[in-house]
Amino acid sequence: MIISGIQKFSTLDFPSYVSCIVFTPYCNFRCKYCHNSELVIPSEIEKIKNTFIPEEVFFNFLKKRKNKLDGVVITGGEPTMQSDLKNFILKIKKEGFLVKLDTNGTDPNLIADLLENDLIDYIAMDVKAPLDKYKKIIDVDIDTNLIKRSIDIIKSSSINHEFRTTIEKSLLDIDDIMEIGKLISGCMKYAMQKVNIHENVLDKNYHFLGAYTDEWFEQARKMLVDEHYIDNCEIR
Image (cartoon, helix red, strand yellow):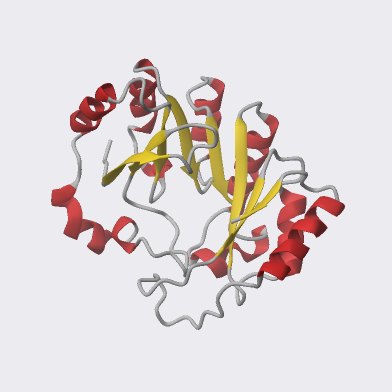
């Protein structure tokens, strides 16, 4: 397992639990507003390879945190690109910790495998846009049927889950949010996230318009609930 970093303590990232966070490098998306280029762009990843954390160092840390941490959040980058992800999770579970996985949903077969084998306790999947607008956000060609399959697999499971969308004015509008609502209708939780235009955004040539107002987000939340797409809708 390739580990690019560890956050030793978090009360925010794993709902209802105290966790640590494992960061993994590499991603198959190139989202315009991403500000984690050191985990996404191969040339940038190369620069930090000497800071990668050996797996045994992580597990030594984890063993010392028994009775202090409830779980481990695995995020990226895109964790499902790691060939050893399943074995890594098995080792975490063997130590008695819960596991939350953050993913972009491009590997539905792996997601299904992890769910079927009860290896994750919470999954958060980014839904970037309505399926027909994905490329506008991620700047790469993908088969959006993979995204749809992952959504359906997660929704049909009994696992605690959430879908989330980062929203930027020039990239998504209220109609797009309603389309996403239809796509994930019936899910346990949906989080609309206000974009943070960081100076290190991936696409420095793109003219961002920034985040919508609080009033816009509240209107979108109310519309999603009123249309009975989603009962539990958060604004972050």
